[in-house]
Amino acid sequence: MNNIEDDIKRFILRKLVRHKIWMHKHTNIHNLPKGLPDYLRSKKEVKEVIEELLKNKILLSKPTNYGLEVSLNIEKKKEIEDFIEGK
Image 1: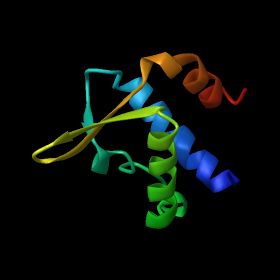
Image 2 (image 1 turned 45 degrees about the vertical axis):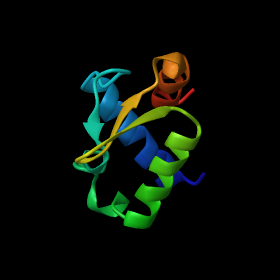
Image 3 (image 1 turned 90 degrees about the vertical axis):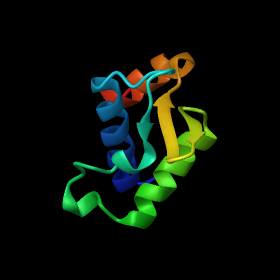
């Protein structure tokens, strides 16, 4: 992963942690890039980062009739916090 993708990943994870979007509390997948600085807003890179987070089970998905909802996986809490802190 390059620096831009790491920055996007850190932004998304920090945002979800700040809003306490863990396990049974969800947000729409389209809300994840909101608030990203312009230089990080490449749709391709944001999409790749979100797909990677879902593939690695850091984000859990919940399909609904109005779109895909996501939340943080509580079992990966330590890994998420370490990444945000830069460890």
